Image 1 (tube, rainbow over the protein chains, first blue to last red):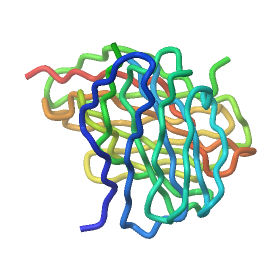
Image 2: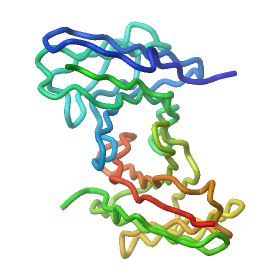
Image 3: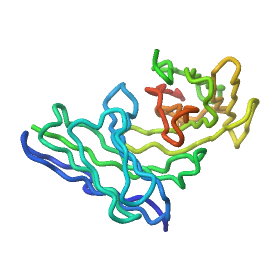
Image 4: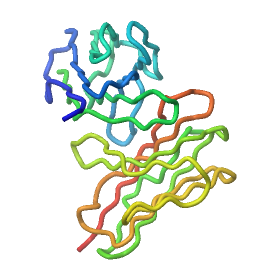
Length: 113
Length: 112
């Protein structure tokens, strides 16, 4: 079955450590996205990529980095520069037509203490 | 002004009633509109997409779009307890291509 796989489901890290969240899709979608969700704030866009080897900052990119070396993969690194990293992180993909909806992975809940 | 606004709720309706969820958006050039349902602790799942003024029906769900007034709504007929969730309105603003902007969501509670 086609879909988006995020791993791990839960992640715990100490403050000051970088952490990488995995996102893999087998939908053959061109566009991939990372969103962050905090209680009561909806989803906020961190980074997005419309083609391999290219990506753009979203609304809250500070403290995060991404790569898009393969069409199927779009990992997100939460760096120690991110001041408040504890959140629910959602990866999504779309065919990238400009009208297409997003399809989401199951999310990674990151807790930094 | 937020790009996409929703009443946070909670909206409480009795089982079998019609639930009406509303969303307004600020970019008049927006062309694509979506409703997602999100259960607690889960990821959003797409319920409806709508691109033209008017109504679009899919089973118990009806999406309504009024571009002149810049609002989009979702009606859920014969509401069930399993419909209890947060409903997210999402819009692709006209000048930003295919980046979805989400509202904060409306919590719906259906009481049996």
